[in-house]
Length: 405
Image (cartoon, rainbow, N blue to C red; front, side, top):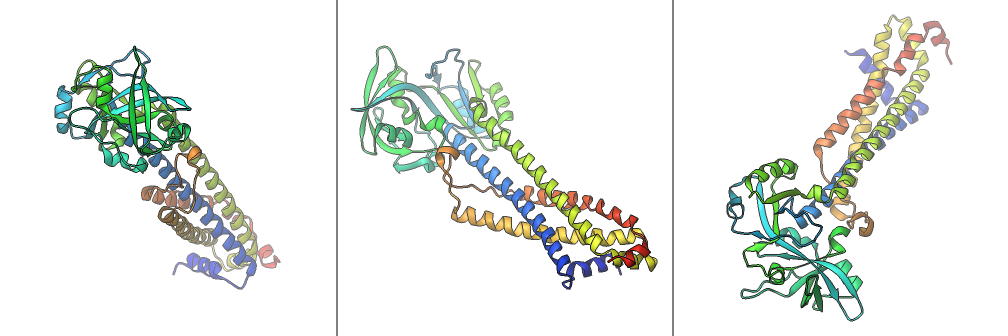
């Protein structure tokens, strides 16, 4: 029989001493709350990062292939769709999809308002599956066989600013010399929640941009490249740079919107600090609680010493006791965290203001690797800290301990 473990179980399950019971429950609650907070923090952070990244990637792709442009113009220089890359990209295993695009600056005009926008032209290769969830009202624009389509979708932000709705017509004057004006028909309204896109981008047929720029049907502004594994974006950028024509340039979206991605990386540091603080609090609470339990069991320690029990064996009693409390705390912490995460993921009970958080509800990302890591980290760190309060056992003298009241 493992005597220290047997005694520690009896101490843990002892309900006669209301004080010991309360202290033990406080220990369990402390560990449970700390662990649950850490798990939820990482689940929510992961969900937040995934949601923001997916919004950007689904809207702009992971990589952009364009011509070198040394100016600050929004308009791109023409890229030919007859390049080898456009025809043989399917042979590149890490590429999932490519689509053509072209941008052109313009002014949207209504009877009362004028607003500067960027017209993003896309072709028939436009991935509607990725973009579809952003449509909040109406439908995506269509294409024409003989000429360009005048149907567009605008953002909810532009819609509110200019008081435009689905099925309304609006005029756009493209910024060029001389300016050229076209009448557009709004078929849908989208919202990403990302101000960089919503405040200025309207989306329509790339044929309109080609006509305004006097381009042939084989000329576009560039390619948006979607890769299968976003974690390999840097590797894909380097490989793609060696494959494309000499006059083309590859740019990661994370570099193009560096402020947004730097902000997401900064959140990792905040959560790491939060994790450290919770572990420190858990360690201090566990040390304090175990000291109280040792002081309360001073008589028992004296009796065991008088019966010849070595101090090392007595220390194991309280270490086992602490580890049992930690295990109970971990169990309840996981139950609470997973329950809250499941309810939020399923029913979206905690809302967010999209103006500030880019989404309508708190997102959850199920990262079970991080779940296991947090459990092991908490158990190891707090268990190692249990050796500190057990040093008190070495200072207890049997006679004084037996007489201790």
